[in-house]
Length: 397
Ligand code: AMP
Image (spheres, rainbow, N blue to C red):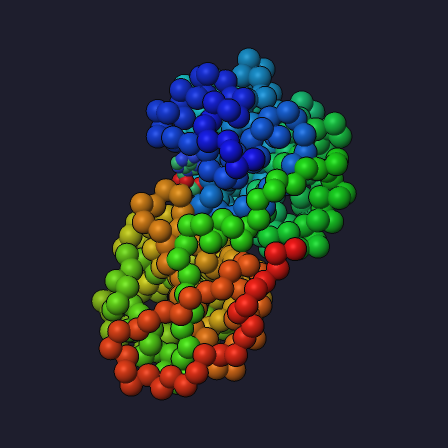
């Protein structure tokens, strides 16, 4: 798998190769090298990959290769957890398609349905959307899946987190049984595997563990700190790192609000915000827009909301509170180090002395021992000793 170094080796058409060169894709990313050759044969496939690894092209290129552009019917459907992500997949697909005569339709909530219906009537072959709106379009008879032969579940773990399971199942039941199903997910918890078992046929899993991807593109550190010195440490780390954009993760909404209060006094307004589950969707959208435009420099987030953030300019992740679950670590850190950014992402995890065991669990999960982060000029830092943990060797089996 790893010796695939060119797109030519993946079995793509010449026109696609030309388009990839035009948009500056020089070589396949690991998930593309692993997934494309399998998916292009029509086999069901599970790809463990997070956003920023090139996963969109990994499922979209083999999809586009198989779709018949001369047939004005829906042949492929991509389900994604949020409007944001759907729009992003849509934009990326159009870029990948270039001059190829393929038509795409977007089916997401919060946008007028008229345009979406027009696109479907206009003969779109590939539909990208959120489960809720896709169900609406199906119910109203605007979307027909009789000719569909590829279904893609993008960020399956997040879709299940959000509670889309019933909608996804309803949609998949309306798809022809002999279709190909591709499932992409940053993590593969039992619920995702259950969905795969029920709706996929002998899926092949791509041999590319999330851990490796994280480690490859992101420099990760831990730093020990006393609970009452976390804010001071955060200020130091920010001064030292000078991040272009940073997300600071807290475990609780209250913690997020408290930090916002502290930082609002120090930073120009409009450059800092907090995002958590209590914030109305409209406000959350605004925060993400500001983040994307680059206006927002520091975002404080909790896990549930933070893991949905998908913005390419983020240079740093700071785990102000160590995540409660190891998978959350992967999700959090996955918000940076994207393929498209020219610098590697950096992640720093704050660990109190009592949290050594939690740090060890994360290190086991990513199969890497994190180096310690050095804070210049933080002499007053009451550093005692490293948290006790077994750093000798992990996994390997
Ligand atoms: P994704 O994980 O699909 O969200 O992709 C992350 C970013 O990487 C997007 O901006 C893509 O355009 C870019 N990208 C994906 N594949 C490649 C590639 N092979 N070479 C260069 N950039 C890529």
